[in-house]
Length: 491
Image (tube, rainbow, N blue to C red; front, side, top):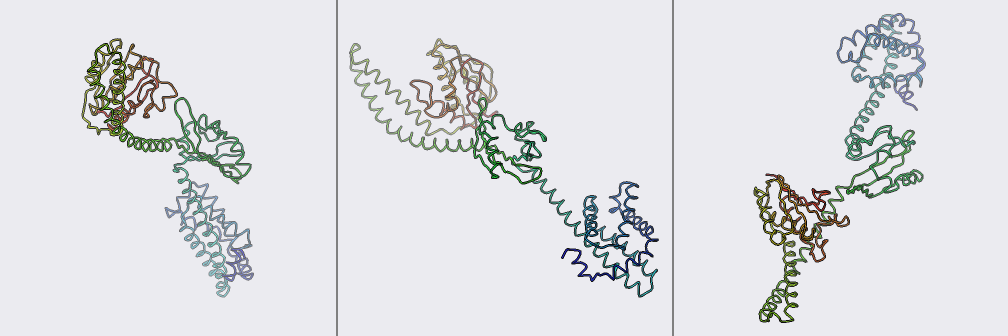
């Protein structure tokens, strides 16, 4: 049984009610205009209900609608089409923003006028029966209108909530039609894709440069749509110039008359970088533990070997043929001892004590110390700069960077230090850092020298990090070679 039929059954509405109401129409028809005018006088008297009225033309149209409604209430037929029209009134009240309470009060006004008309126009016996029939049909009307009103209002509220949810989702989701046109997208999609994303434009044009080719995205999408299955690409790396971005892509086919699929794009770049840093930190911690053990095992034997060599060579004549060989052995022992010292420095980094420092005197001190050993190097210190840093650690970093620069120019060339507040740039005119080494240049044991330990830059980066700073390799410096940037905390 449908809703209207069930209500008729509950209220006991039957053919005799229909006949009474049709008979009552002869008395009601001449009074309909008066009932309508009374109704709208009351509507306009109350601010809340009057707010939905925007013009005299609208009021006149609504009066005509109420006249038709009253005619249908009394004359019927009270069938399924009648029920649909009442439900449409409820939906319309939601659309115009009429509060639900006015539906009930308006029905009271109409019912009160119709019942008064029945009592004044009919015999007492007929009036009682007609009033009962009017209450039945008006109760059905009210139930149909308010039931649809509540459902429509809940649906509208749900649509608003869903709109808020989509707008504030922190995921990039794009809705696409069968012609590859973007129909809608979350706000996060606009943040991720920027001006490339336009509603009404092709989804391919909105994708980050290189992403489609990196994973054959269009082919993957066709496969997903053909199988009607969701397809996920867990990680796609896109490299442009010197940067790499990582994405997760999910394609979801839809069964909808206007939308064909959803494209979910997630930028994993920061997460991948964080995971890499965590893995690196764990690896460095393990390496530090191993380095400490190795260094302690090597230091004592090396000290013993060095002592023995010094005793032996001190007792030899200057022209002793084996003296040259032993001198080279002693030099190698000293190199190994320096490696042990580097291992210990890397394994047990010093804690930084941050104080305001002036960087120009520090740079001049180190260049003047290196200049006598490298007379063909042109050291140049430019600018001034202050920073909140540990002076000893800055001295160590500068010393390592300048020694690397000296090695890069092979003892003859230009090494330049540019100072700014909280920044130090060390540049040289050597051959630069090979592209294949740039991404791992600060990893331990990575070196471009034939006899380097590969720990100098790793220790320097570690020291910079201890001062809440960073050491980086610049894309381009003032000279033709490498350019390293030490970034520190400002004063």
